Length: 298
Image (cartoon, rainbow, N blue to C red; front, side, top):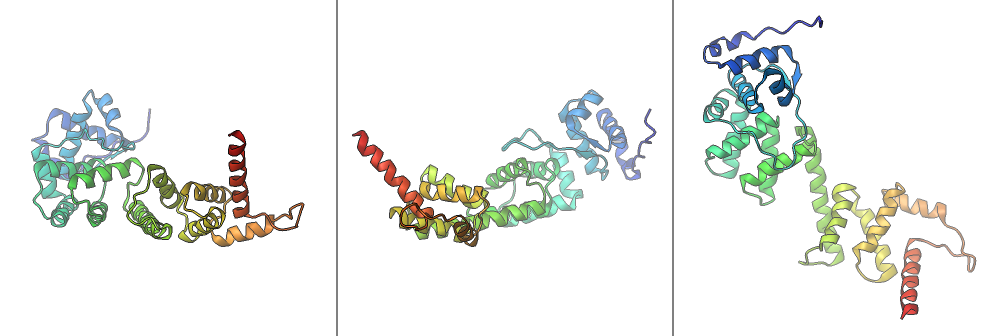
């Protein structure tokens, strides 16, 4: 038998006891015993549905009793099965300063009065996903700044980030910094390549997102690969650049200086002429061999 004593019920819930249902009282006792829980565990242990547990937890939060910590599994994008009744939303707006601050700030940002469904969606992010007012306001500002002015876009983006593990303000800051760097580098790459208004193809978009959003490569390194490409084949071909950049990344070469140092350390004289055999010569030779094979097949 465990020697751990259950926690006492907080005294501030006394005014809410008379209006609590049997399910809500059961959940209150359960949360005094369990430090951590999942909705499925609580529902199984209490013989309730997950929805009944959710409503009960929201009831006690509205009453000012915050005890027990819900263990949240990562959410799939656009997962949305939590709903709140009008009383729960109204109570949260009245008693929870953080939620009220988030709603007031977002209403001002989007320049409209929120609907019942809007408040429900925001309470889902705040209550179920555990996002702070600071997180929600920062992400919403980022979305609006990119021209995404629909609240639905913000809520879906937030759910997607939570599913990826970006579930705290600190993680969000790092994510947005990385994304802003990627956007700036992609714009500079488009200018460098002379793409103008031409959209990336699906494959090209995969390449640039991998370089800048996933691998976080510096623009100088990508520009160096561009220069090798132009010197070797005389045209812009992002698949060619991708081969160079993937090999450098695999070898841990993350700066132009790293690449130059590696070249000096690995240069070997050819059997004839004694000159070096560097990246652009290697790829140019590979292209020449490929062309020769094609001509021989004709």
